[in-house]
Length: 184
Image (cartoon, rainbow, N blue to C red; front, side, top):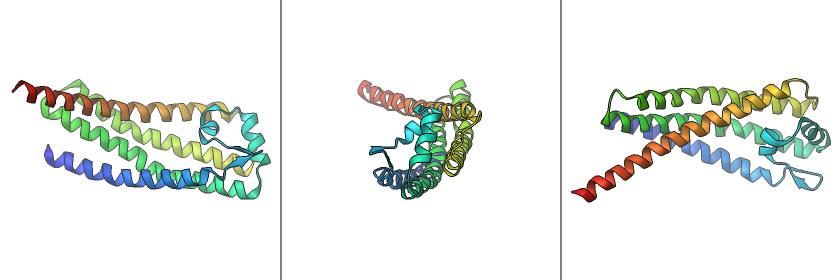
């Protein structure tokens, strides 16, 4: 168990480095993402802006902001390479915690499923970026906007569920250890 946990931990730390590097680069660029003297929200583009607003932004930004947004979306691929495998490795480290207590548990299967689903979240994020880059070049959004939002929501649900479930397992195992030490 210790050996598997160590391997997943090393992968997690590598992914954490990619995650931080990608997040830093994207955060650094966000101050230059401005349209009509207001910042362009990446979360707005992903989740909240209606398609008319996205078309308005993508047709109204100047070439400098368009280039920076394109770079931002490109750095998102580095961020993704750290995020989803990182969540999967976090899930697998949590599964090692469960396995040590009960090698044949339903929780083990659930956490493995959550780790495996990170491949879908990663694919959904790639598709999301494809759409945003496509619309950035040609700001015409058709009927695919509904599909785009389904992809984005699924990505967020899968990623957050995996990360939160793994963190919950780590937190409960930490409290169990403290309780066992205080009883002895």
